[in-house]
Length: 126
Figure (cartoon, rainbow, N blue to C red):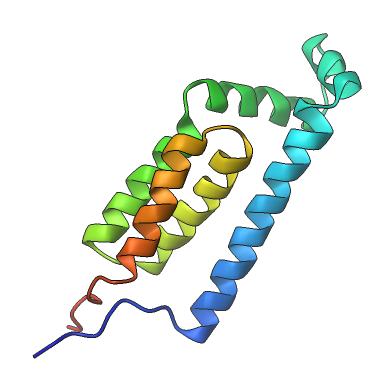
């Protein structure tokens, strides 16, 4: 018997849209209001202690080690072999950060794997 393809329900799709847009919005905010804003960037590098500067420093460390891209890729690979809405959400959020914050090579590969995972059969019901 042929199993149905992995397809999120309407409610799950709405949550994925919310997670995706919030991640994309936060990544854009960090990039253009902190990382590429000279005033904020220089103040944070000089030692200013605010939540934005702490996030700025954390983002720089994660970017240097390509964490956004690797997390997205690992979650997408796991989702390819065992489809799960949680893995889709994690990969989607990490890929949004990765694409906006210049880890685009791994994040774009993860997005391709996410699209490919929609053609996989759904997990068998127990």
